[in-house]
Each structure stands twice: as C-alpha cells, then as structure tokens.
Length: 359
Image (cartoon, rainbow, N blue to C red; front, side, top):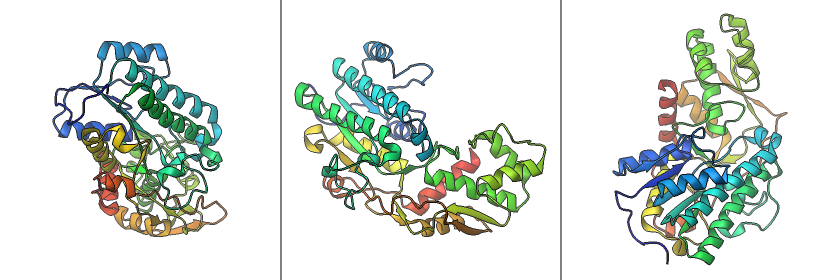
C-alpha cells in the first residue's frame, strides 16, 4: 500500500481545501483543538482550484500529508436550478484536480466531503449507502450531485487502481458557525435563523440593529442594492419581501415535511475520527455522516421561535411547495465504524444563533 496506517502525527502537514466555509472552518477548528498546527490553507483568490495547473503547482510546492476536500461551489435550490452548468463544471474540476494531485504527490490520506443530494430522489428511507445510482436524481440540483458522485467514484477507482487511501464521507444537512446567511443562497436553518431574527428586531422597532445586520451580511435577491438605510419604510418593504413582518413570519409550505440537521462541529469530529482511525479498505466506497434522525418542520419552527425569542406568530404559505417529504440518511454503517454524534439539535441551534448575533 502507498499509505501508512494509524494515527496522524502532530507534525503532519494538512491541507484543508475550503477552509473559509462552514465545513472547512469546522475541520480546522477541530484539528487545531487536537494540537495540529501544520495546517496549510489558501483562499479562492490565492489558489484557483478549478485550474489544474495552479492546483498541481500548489501540491508540488507544499506536498501535504493529509487533505480534507471541503471546497465546493454551493447554493440552495434557486442557485442550483439557475446555474446548473457552473455547479457541475466547477465542482467536477475542483474535486478532480485535488484528487489527482493528491495521488500524484503521494498524499497519505484524502477525506472527500460529499452531500446527501447524491442519493436518488425516491430513495428508500432511511437512505443507505448502497442506494447510490439506483434511480433518478432530484432535478433541481442534478448538476451538483453528478459532480459529487464523480468525486466518489474517482476516489474509489484511484484506491482500486493505485492503492491510494482516499475516503468519501456523505454528510447530511449542515448548520453552524460560519454558515451562509444570504437568504437567496442559504440552506434551510440559516435562512430561518436570519428571517426570525430580523422579524424580532422589526417587532421591537430596533432599526439600528436591523441596519447593522443588513449591512453586515447580504440578503440577496437584488434587495441589497435597493435598500435605503435611512428610510424605515424602505427597510420594512424589503423585510416583508423576505417573509419578516411586524406581526408575523411567513414560512413556505404547511410544515408537514421532515428534515435532518447536523452541527458542522459533529461533522468535523467525524472527519477527524475517520482520518485518524479508519482507512479506505474499512470504509468502502462511501459512508453516511448522519445523526440518523430528523425533525418535522412545524416542530423546528417552534423550537427556533423559542430560541430566537420571536414574539410574532408563524404563518404558513401553502401556495409554496413543501419539497421532498423526507430525506433521512441511514446511520448503521457509521455507527459500526465506531462514531456517533454529540451535539443535540436544540443546543446546536442555540450555539449557532449566539454566534450569529455576536459575530
């Protein structure tokens, strides 16, 4: 075999691709907590991972021992539907360049981060690893999913042909510190946190903090350019457009569907555990990183309402779609590998909201 088995040495050079994002930043925090300080990072402005030439030159110079592949072009349903070619091409190139360079420059172990969207739209619940490629994907994010599937297969075939040690982890929906709170591109929980928080501020007529929030983070949909920060009516108009009113908060659908959510700190813990203790031959082609449970959206809204301290009522817009009824990942395999999550949903949301309002 090309790799050394066993625990990572504290002096090992570790490259985290995508260290500024939700997952990458959580992995970096986890590694530094464990005493790993020889960590190499580059922003997208410093290193264009879509370029094979730049990626290979970086690996030639740095020669990392371990690689965590968390870099990706990501977005919600609207972004995936609007820019499918970019999601497919960019993510395909990023993963292909990093995986090939890791092989070429003798990386001991690569941890490839995927997504639950790799699984078929109508996969049996809970979704097991072996349901990959058994039926059609969800059309709204097919481009992104295909790129992630290609990365899984590339790792698998490099292991088979070249005896590399590349492992692929498929995390469920993530939330946490350094999440994306742009309402046009955010995933479910950060989008709800921000909408509820802005609605609470509006109820309290706290326009000073509303303006601070809007200036700190973009809200998307082209609204950032249209807001007159000196005009309260202009601010209220924009907040109403995103579902935040003085007397209510509007959410899509009827609240009857279920979603699984996991703290990015739990995912980082799983990444560290598997990088330290398990090799590709033990993990196989891929493994789900999941809590193995989910929550009904109506219950999630109530939980979030209590955490944020939202005084308004929650109103359902049933003219909008619910989305997939359930998308729960099976946790049998990851439990057999010896890992389980530690962060309970309520505490995880509390920690994320605290970070959001103080960052």
